[in-house]
Length: 114
Length: 115
Image (cartoon, rainbow over all chains, first blue to last red; front, top):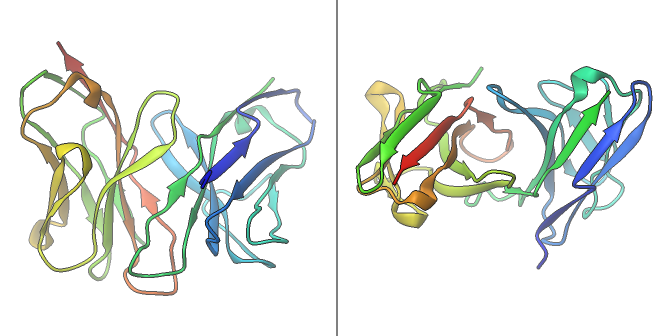
């Protein structure tokens, strides 16, 4: 298994540009989520999904959009990038099994907005 | 609402010394508790987790953590630190049982190891 993969690893955007961060997992996990990590802030939840066609907002959803058309993929869209969205973005997945509850993280995407 | 506090932003220890990283949580019931480690430029890796039962849990890489309900704490320990343990450590809390898998993370503790 490749686990959780994210592309790209690095990205530089200009203010106002849009882009999609890709996340895919091959473990058939129902639950997927996006976090952003900023220095001294830990990880903050942006959006999450409990299955195909079902998404919901986390702690910091403004400026981001998600969709979940398949179990495997959970892309994160930045509609109009702002410097405040400069961050490292992590995707994670977990099976909907309370006996497991472990989130598996991707390697991250480092985004800079100028 | 659940929350996690990691009081130490940065800790420096000598190689071979013991380590304790502190974590305090706020949650209405018994939560699920986790410790993750992040090496520079990498994603997060689970070190250990507590769901129920024995309050002392063992994890990977020689780490252990103790759940203390009375103190709302879940401190991470290692008896002898290796240089490769230098990383950032995150404590996280999640709701127990089925139905919600959202984790709340602390702000992290960066560990430096002096050779």
